[in-house]
Length: 340
Ligand SMILES: Cc1cc2nc3c(=O)[nH]c(=O)nc-3n(C[C@H](O)[C@H](O)[C@H](O)COP(=O)(O)OP(=O)(O)OC[C@H]3O[C@@H](n4cnc5c(N)ncnc54)[C@H](O)[C@@H]3O)c2cc1C
Image 1: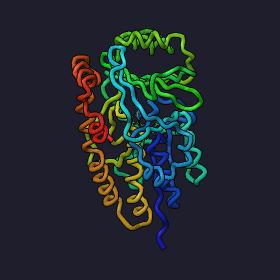
Image 2: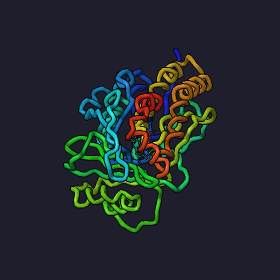
Image 3: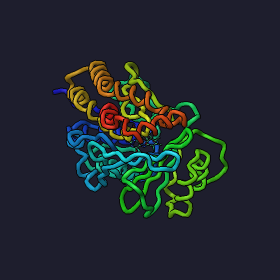
Image 4: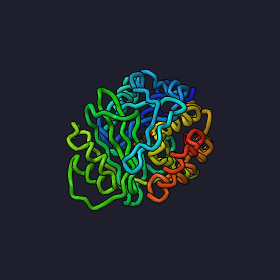
């Protein structure tokens, strides 16, 4: 009888870990290489929208997401003023990456996966049985992502989304009374450090009233994270390496859908990879099947997000958006469904 073929995964974020876990549950041998360690804070809004229960179930993530907070409403702020409240068509989950990634890593090991942390791996794109779940590809240096947690910071809504000059920032509650503050900013030469850097970015983006509100907040300085050279791809590549999650395509953060896409890409890859591992398909057939499923699932969503993104970042277009929102002419529900 043929032996089960092993799978190697490069990158232990949500895509890599959830895929590894699901493959182990299907008795496929899995080795995962992660450049960093667990637990650790990451730049992320930690607000998961559009993740269906069926995906959670197929990937066996239920117990790991059990205590995620469920959020129902988003409040949009422009010029420091609350412009529109939006009820989400389905609740979003909120849980810190510090907790979620560490839990997934533990579950992978408990399920018999081999996990190498602090192990950066490089492989040829066309090597059989290799999955690249190594996160975003480096882009131009114009955008910077920043994130920090604060303790017991009162919020106006489940998620506050503040639009500033070439920037936006979200505030949402995660576990243990923590509020995650995470934003995308046009990169500037600012000399501040620690939480003061975030406040300086807010002021530079005309978000002074939010900066005033956060001054003196009880920040967890160990959670401060930054990521430079964030870029967004509108296309799922159809050749070369088999990439999942952000390594495949990165959707702009305002959608709150990048984490769900990481899980969904693992879900789409799972069936073909199990077939491959059981010697019932070649690697070429497997990658072709997965890439075409990824394209079908994400193409429209990525194109719509790419089209909308400038409306969140550029003040003249933000003004249009705000007018439409105030007049209740913004079709939030249809927009939500095309972006998820
Ligand atoms: C500012 C900002 C806010 C965001 N807010 C949200 C939000 O609110 N909701 C949401 O759903 N999404 C959000 N996102 C997007 C979300 O964080 C990503 O889509 C998600 O983390 C993708 O998961 P992933 O597993 O593909 O990649 P990652 O989580 O980035 O994991 C990739 C892993 O690969 C490892 N790695 C890389 N190269 C190698 C190598 N050669 N060898 C070994 N390991 C390697 C890295 O160390 C990393 O751990 C946000 C993004 C930004 C920038």
